Image (cartoon, rainbow, N blue to C red; front, top):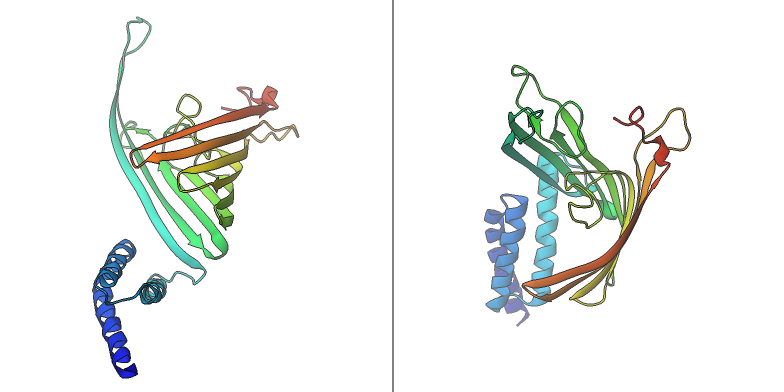
Amino acid sequence: MKKRNYNKLKTKAALFTGAAATLAVSATCHAQSSDALIDKLVDKGILTANEAKDLRDEADKNFNTAVQAKTGMPDWVSSYKLSGDFRGRYDQISGDNNALVNRDRFRYRLRFGITANMLDNLEAGFRLGTGDSAGNPLSNNTTVENNFSKKPVWIDTAYGKWTAINSGGWMLAATVGKMDNPFTVTPMVFDPDLTPEGFALQGSYAFNDKHTLAFTGAGFILDEEKGNVHDPAMLGGQVMLNSKWTPNWSSSVGVSAFQILNRDQLTTNNVA
C-alpha cells in the first residue's frame, strides 16, 4: 500500500514538474499557468489540497532561485516589476480673446519605472519621466520643438516603503521619498500626475470581505529655504470607509483635511 502511494506521489510530481517546466517562461506566465495547472490537478482528484500547497511553495522557490541566477538579483530581493507607458497628443490652444495667440502643439509623454520587493516587507521603487525643461510638477508631457533638440528626463518617483503590519485584517505601511499621491481624491483637489515629496503613513482594517476602514496621514515638503529655518510644508489626513456591496457595485466615503505651514515662504522668488 505504501509503495503504491509512493508511486502515485512520484507520478503526481512528475506530471506537475514536466508541465511547470514548460510554463516557467516568465514570472507572470509562471505564476498564472502553474496555479491553473495545480487547480486542475486538484479538481481531477490527482492532488490533495495539502499536496497542492506543497507543490506551489516548491515551484515558487525553484522559480525564484532560477530567476535570481539568470538576472543576478540578490537573494534579499523577492521580486521586481517593470512598468512604463508612452502617450502622444495634439494640443490646440485658441479662444475669442484677440490678445490670445492661437497655438498648435504636438506633445508626448514617456515613463519607465522599476519596483523591487525585498525581504522584511520592504519595497523600493523609482520612475523616470519626460517633461519640459521647467520641470512641471503636474505634467510629464514634452513639447516637440527646438530643432530636434534632446529632451530632458526627470525623476517622477523615488521612494522606499515598509509594510510593518499585514495580517489579521490590519495593514500599516510607511513611505518616504517622492511618491504617487497616497490620498484618494478627485482631480479637483490634486492633479493625478502630482507626485509629492515627504513621508506618508497608510493603514487599514478589514471588518470583513465587504467593508474596510482606511486612513492616511502625510507630511510633504513644499520647498527648502536656505535663509529660513521655517520651510513651507503641507500636512494632510484622511479617513475612508470602502465598501463592496456586489461584484459590480462599490462605494467610498470619507473625510480629508489639509493644511499648509509657513505659507508666507511660498513666494515667486522662492518657488518657481
